[in-house]
Length: 319
Image (cartoon, rainbow, N blue to C red; front, side):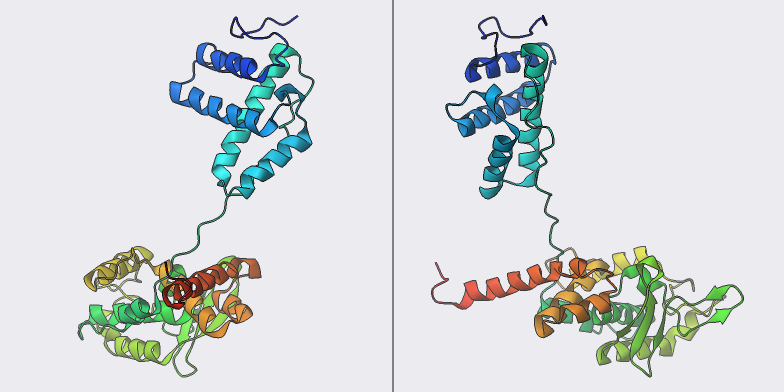
């Protein structure tokens, strides 16, 4: 017969829930030597399980009941991380009962917490997005290239790697072939996205104007490689990191209350196009998503926008 690590006052058959929990907590504290904070968390989780079980003894619980308790926690809008922690606490307790009191099986085995919800992408409001990309900032080359890049990010929803990989035109020379380029005449940009998937995205008139202004002065930066569309002051293809730093500084200078980064412009593009058109498939194509599920996250952003409008305007929504 196995020797128990239980508290001296504990019932040996583990059938009394309060006493078996106390014994398990004593085991965690003395044998496992867990921290007081961790032990207290286990104890609270098991006390909650006892409340869910009611008069039924914990060792008599089965898989279906544990699954039902998990559903109840989820219905109370407990987050996935907290549910996963409780299941871990319960699983450890029943494993201890198996070892110390001969329980036949662990009713928590095979039960998983709900999937953790992914945070929604952050997008700028339409007014802030337009203010950010339309600010002139002077006629110096750095200001012109910044405006062209920021306008194109918002106009076409490009990833920053796609933006920096653009060539001024399609080039095929030796082993080199352009993966992305702009066509000003057709007002479109060709890019190669994830999985080497090519796509063509429209470019709006303000972005075309900004690109023309930049291209007019771009020649003075060309040194060894005439291919890249966007060049740094050193004449090299501009890097994603430089774009990140520049757009963040630009937003801060304009007093936009957000941590603006290039991908936020992509989110803003998708959200604002969806708000205006409601055409999820078109947004999917322009973003280059292989699955519609990746694009559907923007419907949640759209609903949030509508909910804010409702809360701010409907007489019966006001507190």
